[in-house]
Image 1: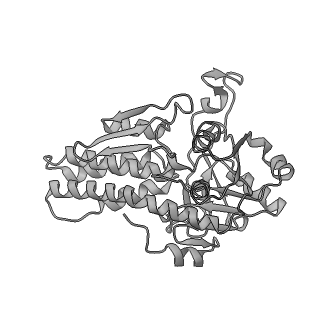
Image 2: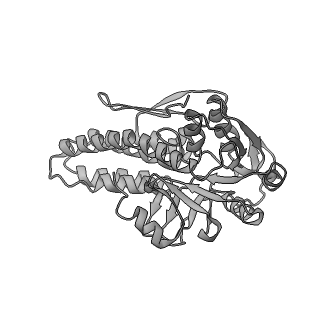
Image 3: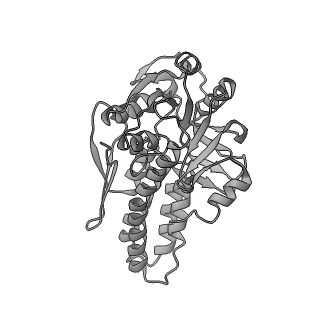
Length: 344
């Protein structure tokens, strides 16, 4: 059974999220009441996963629009809200695509009508995308071997989307259809999204999953005869370059070495058709590397390099899996399959 990570009450604009920083030990929901709380929720990874952050941002924008309807400076102040939300996660493009689309609504000077339309579209986006992620799962099943050993990293599952997930979608859809997989999940240092989140949600859904540390990947591929690797994405450029959780690039290199397919699963909202291979990579607090569970594990004052993402070039990617199907990561294919479809 999948878990609902974001809840928006349409009558009251109450926004409730699953605090993913507490998983797997505690399943607690928190209410987001202010813009500052929303920014903190994204920055501290209470809310995480590129698609989920986009829905969350849309609901926050809807809440703020409702608050600002009596402000004569409505348009400028709402635009500022949108810019602040986008700035919380500069690498993931889903949030930017959704917020900019909502801010571009042009229905006159009726601020109340604009606020209502933003809310309507935010809700419709969330509801519609359940079908999007199921479709990703269905398409992934056409390229992953039934009963096979599949490796993944980070958490691109139900709690990172509206349901099903991206990279984890074939495992959920497969279970519905009686198709099983043996999933190997990298722990995903430094914040352990694989250990804390992927293993938690797949085990909760009674899907076979084995946890490994990140530096066990090569030996696992070789000794356990991994058939394929599938990952999610935070941004995919028109040239097929993929920004995803740090550690993804090394898995792609390993896949190339061992001659196994490497797939990236993501919805159309993850594509940035304005970008080539230049992607801003967010760097995070050094304590994520020097501490575990609040306890220091490294010398005080040591220099730390802590990028949250890396970029995998298209020549290491076997195929991109979207709601439209599976295709090669070439600019022509991406433009054909995705061009003109990024909208809310």
